[in-house]
Image (cartoon, rainbow, N blue to C red):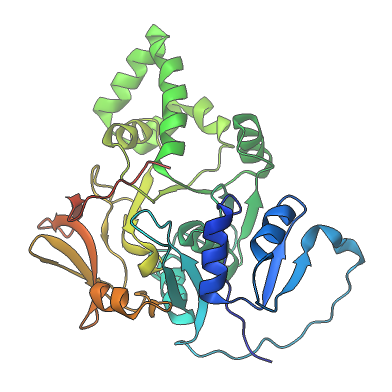
Length: 348
């Protein structure tokens, strides 16, 4: 028995992009659903690939009986997943991440910066064809024997109901999610004179313990058990971070990219620095070359699949050139100031 390589794909991809990715990685098995069946059939229409197609909606999980098998051994250098980038600046690139790459990130937040434990419940909000939610919302919680909770939809009512029903401890989301939540809360606070005065008082006192008591009802709205709000994917608006802190929540912001499985820096609990995505992730080295952030460590990708030139451009002497500009302050906090090349990263 050998281990397989996972290639998660966005179900909303245009057929042309789906064709490109399948032609690039040449999968042997394709999993799809009733919803994506037509797109898959169209994409496979002119393909000469011999692909086993499996419609997951045809299976009744209650009828499936399996026996426990010993999992195959794997090498740390073996590729476990190929994550295709969005293709914003050209054709999508397949980022080859090894077992060692992903495991280094998972251990970073379970054994070193201990965010996940076996009693915590993590809410899955983001699509799993991105490495941040795949590693942070599923793999890390399961690795630490925690619980993964899926919300029926991203409608606010469903999210709130899930938070309250399951007493969620960890939320992993992008800046847009926190911005929307903050906007809704601030509108209610600003419309009430007493609540507005209390918010200003909490802002001056700047005590998480005091704020949690003062805004107990807000915490209860989130289920009352939130410990960490993890944010990645783009820069978090500083006002959003400040307001959540005033309400008694710590937003742990991180900085990274798919090529780093994904974390390069992460904010330690109790060491939140508004405007910074934290300090170097465990095992990572970071330095600046002509203002560009470069990094190396156990979570840096193996290669871009079938793209030797692009790999050589990004990886030089073991260092990954991120294309981002920034600096590290005297206390080790990273600040990202822009892009070396023109690229727009949206809040979602």
